[in-house]
Length: 304
Image 1 (cartoon, rainbow, N blue to C red):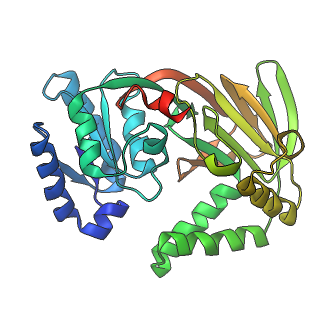
Image 2 (cartoon, one colour):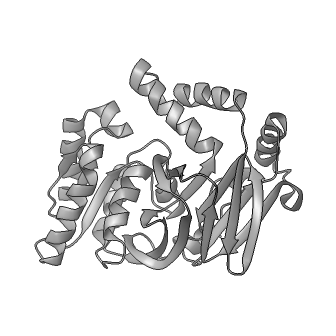
């Protein structure tokens, strides 16, 4: 069990107390567990070591506790191996856990792992880097970068830093000139935001930001057509209210792979809330059924 020592729950409860609570929850469920409290920068190395132990049959599975960025890191190491991944949602938003139909309560999430029921779900990747939720180019990566700078330098809480960063990014509103190439398509786009989801996202109304399936084997590309600050803000408002006009507001493509090109050599890219500076062109692809997770098989049917 790899736990991000700086995840939201660890910060609130204290890493040591959280470790003790998790150990008790696993013991109650009848599972033998080794819990490692790991710093975010060391998570990939810890996941690789756990993967190698699983290959040697020293452990039967790997579990991860943290937010979406932490889960994405471990999923990237385990994708394609067949090693089952248990997920404890210990972050702020926990999008991936919600879309899997996992409970928010940690003890209940441990019970899901103890039941041993697994399913395979898709992951996506760009230039070889795996993401489980989404990737984006444009305003959002700039906002995340500004948010993390504020948190590091001023100690702001995440939501406060996010609000301030959003105001700053909108004040310095900019457009990206990109070329989208995919499956016989080659088209230029001038946009403030290009978003690529691991499967299709709901983009309006009460289900905004959720996915009905993680198993459809497709990337879903959303290109915002707005060219002004106010138009983009109004797009967000209408999306929340369920008033979105997909044909007018967005270019939406369902693909298995896509390439994003620009005149720049590198681009800032958001991957599950983390920021990377990647070499252009950006080559995206879907990897159907690449990740085995502990999750109820009925979760998809219940969500639909």
